Image (cartoon, rainbow, N blue to C red):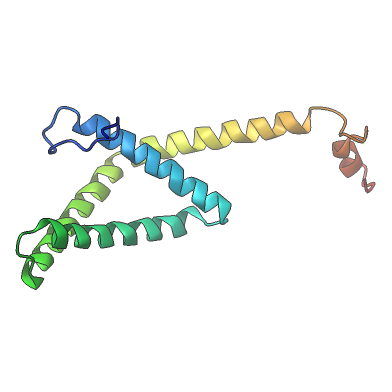
Length: 138
């Protein structure tokens, strides 16, 4: 059964970029949900995802090549390393933009937290912010 997640025929296919973005977002959401459920850090998840990517590339070579060989796998892994290097170089080009967006998101998150603190009395009718300011335990 075909659905909106069909893989394009090749990277020149008109729908490739859209399909790539759609699948990337879906996988990212699943990974982040898993990380949250298991309290895993973003850096640990990055290592896991990289390792999975490498394993998938090796499996893809073995399963999609008519006559896989050790030499062929090594050449494909060299190509993979170049592709990853290209991705990192591209990411570096947008580092300033990424950091600006990350800082803005952190500031917005911090402001939401400030609004929560200023919301007024807690469920028990006390204002925990005032209790902490006055040094009284709640």
